[in-house]
Image 1 (tube, helix red, strand yellow):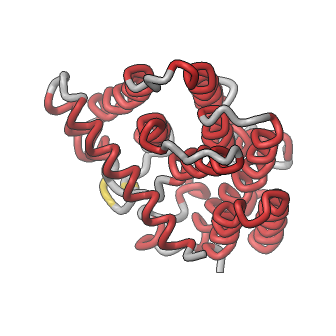
Image 2: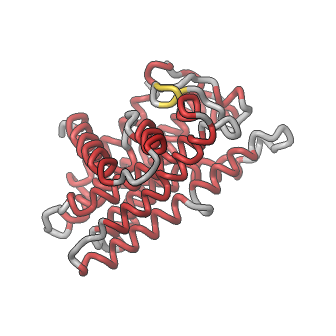
Length: 305
């Protein structure tokens, strides 16, 4: 498998679909549309929509059906809108106060704090509009599609990503117990892993997949999400700004509770590798069909080298 080529192809599919949707939804003040587009089209790995699409296509193939990817592309784009809104708000002075994101000045540095807040709000609401406006015309697909929407809403909400962001901010308090492994795990499993796992599960549900496939991708997502976030924590200490797209060292500067801060770099690397191995092992039950997700998990570890 030419993993890199397939991944690039999926990213191009997502980027093209996002461009088309941005043209479709312009009934707003031009400055708002410009601010939303600035962050949405600033690049990035498009990881979550790629995971969604792969889970959808994997499930369809397991059912001996041809993937109808065009039908669910708007939902994949909605996933990226949700993720991008969270980054815009994450970068604000009241939160992480970052100057760069994806190699460019953060939204509030270009458009001001008020517009950045509204651009984030706009993308979150637009995600919902896009999913509802582009529901499958085939009504037999509606139940699975609505279940997928519910999973995405839950994983991005107060019991998922937002809850994790709150815990992340609370961990900056000097009185926070730095030895609290439970809090550290809560941050990682909610702030990062929740939307990753939710994207995978939503892809299965949108394809009307069975419980076996849903449980398999959820198990993969939990291990992959932890490996991804621990690696991000490590790269914030050791990474190259040109590769990261932002300045490293922000976690330490803000006193965030991370795996390197709690356990040190080498133990953190070992834990990340254990999660990568776990994710790879989870896909073994799918045989050759799980190869893309196996390679994706291994690519996380390669970022550490």
